[in-house]
Image (cartoon, rainbow, N blue to C red):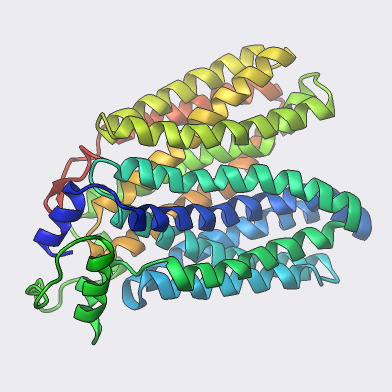
Amino acid sequence: MSQSLQQRVDQGAMNRFQWLAVGICIVLNMIDGFDVLVMAFTAASVSAEWGLNGAQIGLLLSAGLFGMAAGSLFIAPWADRFGRRPLILFCLLLSGLGMLLSATSQSPLQLALLRGLTGLGIGGILASSNVIASEYSNRRWRGLAVSLQSTGYALGATLGGLLAVWLLSHWGWRSVFVFGGVVTLLVIPVVVLWLPESVDFLLARRPADALLRINRLARRLGLAELTRLPLATQREPGAAQGFGQLLTPAMRHTTLLIWLLFFLVMFGFYFVMSWTPKLLVAAGLSAQQGITGGVLLSVGGIFGAALIGGLSSRWPLTRVLSLFMLITAGLLVLFASAGSSMAAALGLGLLIGLFANGCVAGLYALSPVVYDASVRATGVGWGIGIGRIGAIVSPTVAGVLLDSGWQPLHLYGVFAVVFVIAAGCLLLLRPRVVQGQPALAQG
């Protein structure tokens, strides 16, 4: 935004229009939570119908994550050229059709390809919705708004998982994909009617009707209209644009650290989310208790994302986030020694879900404010995409360690180290001023 308009949004109170934008972003993130777990919940039924082996099931479980990584890396950056809102609409259509077509799959390969297609759409949605939630929040509540947006993942995973169980018992695994596709497509009119385009994008790209659209949004924000567009920032001839901006000398240090942080946190987070139910059973708990432990991780995540957002409105986000990383590491160590006790495992599972999800939410809140509006969706998309690569690698690494003779619960000690390293990396992130505000001192 222009300096004055940005300052008015940063310093003013949040109004109903701004919270509505954040609320729609929460709904968009719920689609991610449902989509990540839809294959996990239907894997047993799909395997029984087609007689799949372990490798084929693994392919189906990974295909969606591969698609999400590719969507974040290669589709999300187009939001900096065409707009956040048009890209979200395109990706909703893509992921909705991918879900519906998945229900018609006649072979594991078809389903894997369609899971990848669905993931492409989800990956594109995530970066753009995260950016919009950040851009429509004031300085005080930005951390909370983006963190609340990321609670959508845990809400989608929890509610979607419960609904998937009911659908499976009544109409089989294909009905779960039909439901996901229909809900995704129904979100399209919601976005058309109520999700605003980014004012930052309009000022950075300046389409033909930019002033008209900006003033329309300014009225809804309760701000004075502009009489003319502010002077555009002049770029030097031959200056890097798009992805190249992320690795210019001024941004390289920040970008590489953001990538490393996303990789480490997603690496640890997806180990916890993917393996906990199975490892609890391997440690001596029943299958039902293992599933309960997995559900509690998602339930804890709903509160964890909100908690880190609330704390970041009072203290610097980087400090709160590093504390969450260290607490997560400590809880994983405790879990390694107490996981064979049902009460301890379930209680610690809830807390681990709370703080581990808080770490992911904190990164989502941190990443938009370190990039200029002209490259913000690209920067956030690449951060999330690199994180998804960590999510893909993580379960495989855990499986290799188990095959090498590691005790199931001892793996939690190994992944605790990952969160400690991430907290150390966060300290290396240099504060910088973005659009007139101390980006890393406030959420």
